[in-house]
Image (tube, rainbow, N blue to C red):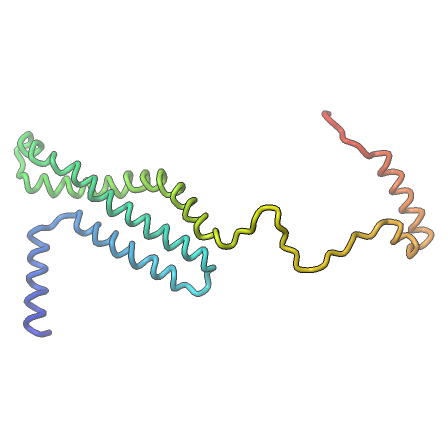
Length: 186
């Protein structure tokens, strides 16, 4: 490895170590998942194209919600670090790091699922309508590809039946006519 690349990598690691925050890790993960998962979903050659678009959009949107939720929760919880440090006598930096981790856990376990449950269904319903817009036919239009054959009546089939079959058919017809009707209750 060249000296320049090695030095830059070393500087990056030192910088990340000095400013170690749980938020940075989860934001990086959400960003990569938000980009890579939709790409891999769209690369699936076995899936239906509409399903792929829907799934890829949903995955990207979920990670965008996660990204924003991590930042919002972190911004709300972080100001508690100084008052907590004063009350407990702990180092503000340690309290800040602890709150950062707590913020990430709270967001991943409660906030993101809650926000996704509230927002994804209405958004994806609209997106689904967008994806299926081109394929919809006007109401009342029929998609007939073959000439329909009329149904044959019982009289058309009767000449080819044997005498025994005709007797059986007549008895079934009489029995079914006697039992015809709707029974309501017990």
